[in-house]
Image (cartoon, rainbow, N blue to C red; front, side):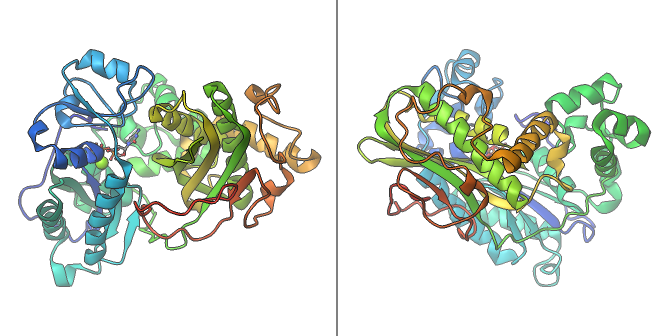
Length: 456
Ligand code: DCP
Ligand code: MG
């Protein structure tokens, strides 16, 4: 993958023969930071970082000027400020991001009904049906970028290709503020020189394992023997890696109209001030959400934390993952980092909830999540599922929860049997979202009525 600071940027500047590249991936540039700059034009051109200015918080977003100093999303704020002491730190305003996200997404909908939203600031558009009316993918992408900027003041980047994988990679290479078209017959030439981390799902451990075999570029993976790949990452993932390396990606743009969410929440009988207790509870809730997702054969892309403080103020914060997951551990990692970023570790907390949205078919079959570092967790959690099914759900618990239960002031039954039978509402104390439509796209910024004990 290209570095996130725009170095290695590659763009298409003139119309090109691109009928073979009808899949667009659109992604807003430095989204949260750019939205903040709409209200602070005086900060344009400066390194700006979004997040809380606390030792324990992480960077939520950074302008490209800040990225030149090596500052990136998800980096601890302390490191970011060491690398770029002159950075201006602004607090996030999630309602604003949802508002601008809706505005931009509705422009995508004007291009084609075939829009697949991936998160708050990105989407795939299949424009093959729009070409006759609106021109080539390059023309459509260029006009969309113009319109987004004219009507919002925000910039986005577009990748156009014959597959989703290549389109997404192309938009990241075009950043910031560019469009890159990769016609079908140039796919291999585009892919092969790139590092293996450009392959969807390859990160951390997989990258290391493949690197140890001397595989550094996508081209290396393409020409490696399938046997080698299978030995390294398993049969399903090995074959898929090689398909991607040749630009083969059968996934189509899906509109995801039947979006759902799965969540659990708990109200404490007495407000909790100890952040360790909150973290433990987040782990427990994440574990249960993962278990329900796996039972339903689903995995989700957006993880949502809900916190209610003693004065009944409720906040929800979400984060979108690179790949969908059905693993409690993965959900917990995200939700915990979202929690640390709230800066609410010392407030009196009344309720916590964990929810996963943007659901799709689960991680078991065909999911790219198989390629990442989740294999070990998947095995452990599947074993827990099997044992829970056999012996009951209270029997198995992540180790860090052992010994912690019921010392936390938790109210409500620690239900577990219910983790497999979807139902609406919940007994007092603990609630969860029944799977059900939550509508497409980001949620509305307007505060919603809040019913303690029920899924939001
Ligand atoms: N975000 C977050 N936590 C992360 C990554 C991102 O809260 N670990 C938020 C802030 C981003 C927004 O999501 O502004 C969109 O994420 P992107 O990965 O698209 O990053 P940006 O839009 O900020 O930058 P760019 O897409 O230009 O690389
Ligand atoms: Mg973005």
